[in-house]
Length: 230
Image (cartoon, rainbow, N blue to C red):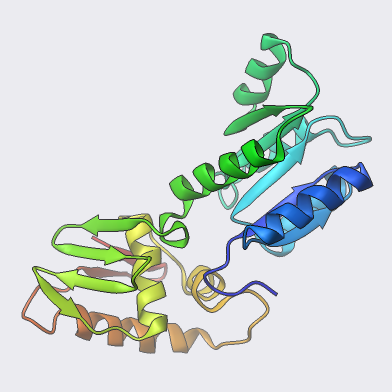
């Protein structure tokens, strides 16, 4: 089970030895790894829980990586998930085809595992900055993911761990409306049963903390949809 701050990587590779090596290295980097043996299994797993990043082999029987990528990038709930495509096809026309299908990155086999891990970190840094130790800023609010400190207008704010993760989620995608269910997945972690009402309670605590020195409440309630920052 993934921890709430532990990014989940879905690894889709039909070759068992390759899958084992990549899974081992991803886990060693601190990622929660979910494995799929083919495209169909990948689509099933994504339907159950959306990962933070997908490492996807191009050449697979039945449903190709290219088709998996195309389907995921046309769905609203998975469109923003970074996809790194692995392929033995080194021709430029193939690389362009992979990227045009929506892949965020393209790595040619045989590849260096060290380079692939660097690509995974770089793509996650863009998608989920707070999990990669990045300092986030929004207006007069600064969040340092490494030291777990939050400042607003020069004042340090005292936030509980759940409020910190909530704020980090909002600051990663300012303006995006998050439903209570999406916040439960991202902040509390998948497979943990928490009532949606709990989200409202922690949002209330976060609002209080952000406004403790007189600043305006930066969080917006979107009726029937959820919450957003700004």
